[in-house]
Structures are given as structure tokens and as C-alpha cells.
Image (cartoon, rainbow, N blue to C red; front, side, top):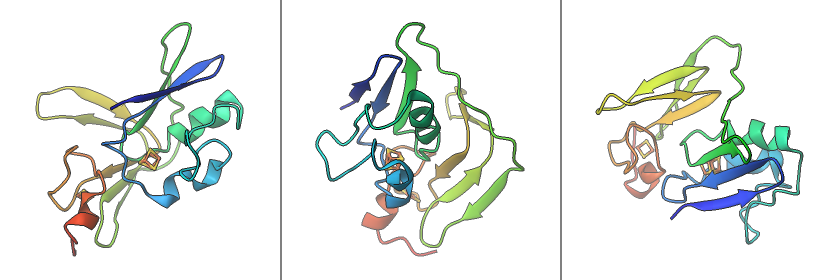
Length: 139
Ligand code: SF4
Ligand code: FES
């Protein structure tokens, strides 16, 4: 079930079913994203731009954000060459600005980093949802 966290400017939405629970994901902004705390997202822990920058790094799409007033979601695009990296026993990481078209033809813009399932077990295809650990994927 979706969870919502709000400050004066923005609302962050978290989809726990989609989260890949990687420690790498949250540790650069621990004052806001701390999985040992309940609730684990503290919107007073940093300013809005820092929170947006961290949400944009979520590789699975579990985190998203929108402006409270306008509903706008304007991700900061990055200016880097696209890099594709197969992580050992884990997802295919794509760094850079990309458009993902799903099987129904819906397009989603992704920025910074996106994790694609390589093991076949994800319930959030084409994205990784951490299931590679449960199925002990090797490759
Ligand atoms: S997948 Fe997204 S929500 Fe889950 S820990 Fe990583 S950054 Fe956080
Ligand atoms: S690679 Fe992570 S769920 Fe498949």
C-alpha cells in the first residue's frame, strides 16, 4: 500500500511493494530516509531540493514526488553519458536519462539511475523489486 509523506512544498510517495531495500539507496540522506525509524521518511530532515534529488535516485520507482500546489513533477535531468551496468547476481543498472516503454506502450521518463530485472522474478517488471535475493539469482 502506498505511503505519503508531506512538507510544505512536496509530497513523497513510497510504494513498499516496489522497493528493492538496497542500503545504497538511502544512505546518502539518512536524516530523511532512515529505515530504522518509524515513519522511515522524515520530511523535516532536509530541504525540499535535497529530498527531490534523493527521490530521483530511487532505482526501482518505489519513490516519487509531486508539488503539493501544482501537482507538478519535474525531475532534474542529468547530463551524463548513459551507462549500463550488470550488477553481479542482481539487476541491470542504467544510469542517465531514459524513456521506458512498458508492454502496454506507456512511456515513463527515468532519471539518474534505473534498476531493471535480470533474474525474471520481479513482480514489478521491467524494474527490479529485490526478488533476485529471494530466488538466489546467480549470474
Ligand atoms: S528502492 Fe527506492 S525506496 Fe527502496 S530503498 Fe531504494 S531508494 Fe529507497
Ligand atoms: S534482478 Fe532484481 S528482481 Fe530480478
